[in-house]
Length: 145
Image (cartoon, rainbow, N blue to C red):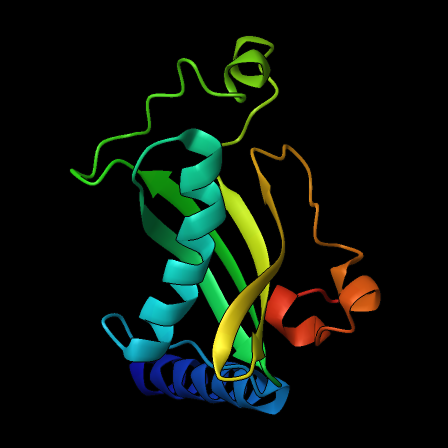
């Protein structure tokens, strides 16, 4: 019985890995120059909006065909949650209409990553139309429909 369970687990893992490879997405390793370049590009508009320095806790980062999709939580440089008092976001927080996640689409142009669009605080799925609107590969968003 143990061998059958073990074999089924291996088959399932192989299928999952094959599916991910078939989609052709990659995720840059933590500390890699590619990951740093993507995060640094996103940091610019977020810091400008919040008027404070930020780091990101990355929940998802997928690349394909020169596009990157990132879902991340901005944090203070010390790793603590952002203090949103005095930011444009405070009203949404007070109304209970805020999710502390940044979702962004970037494109590699001329050797640099450029933020095409981002949403901070959405309580729904803001990227559902991004593949069509920006001609980005659906695989980076994990959209199945």
